[in-house]
Length: 259
Image (cartoon, rainbow, N blue to C red; front, side, top):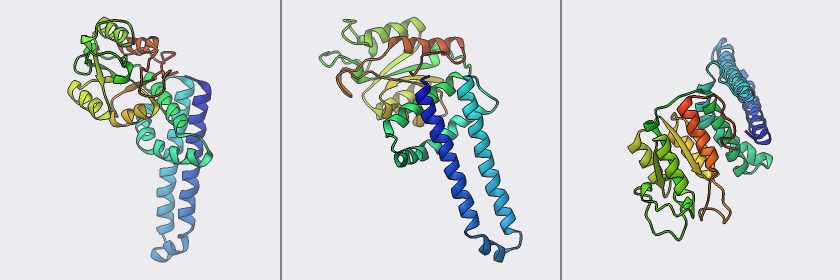
């Protein structure tokens, strides 16, 4: 995982938790007098409740950061992936905008941190339950073969990466699906009922896909866009192969994926 991108995520999540803590303290102090009028114990009850929530959040983030640094799961840290995906990430986007960090940078950092949390789990999956989910823009734009219905129809001309992906899928005996957009991708996931997904897409689509697929483990790999977005894109096949090896062998912290 790229250190600068990891630092972006860690810095943002720590700042976000600090901000949430400050707001929580403010929400407690402002109505403090009113709470005493309701009941003498009301301030203490609210203080303990808020303190528990904030303390749990701080402890959880500390576990998360340690997991990212070590590259190995620390007890309970895997559950924090859900907190990051469903709670903290949307807040981090807003905080990042306030700090002048582009949404794309935060999304890229999010994808890589998600990958690291998945890789830290040491989780082996049966090949037939692993789904390779690829975007249609990987196919050469001039190709007339419709591979979204069946990727094996690829004629293996070598003008795009679909040929390599089909060969990888056959070698590892996993299911390969090519989707034209988020709606079709979600349908393919529902049909395949995988235990794990290896997905290739841009920052935006990977981010939304990881969120939609949770709690399924998703390893996201950013596509290469030499001609701009959504047109004759490519992907580093070595990264896809590494992700497949991870799920096949249950190796922790496989290097290279998501960089």
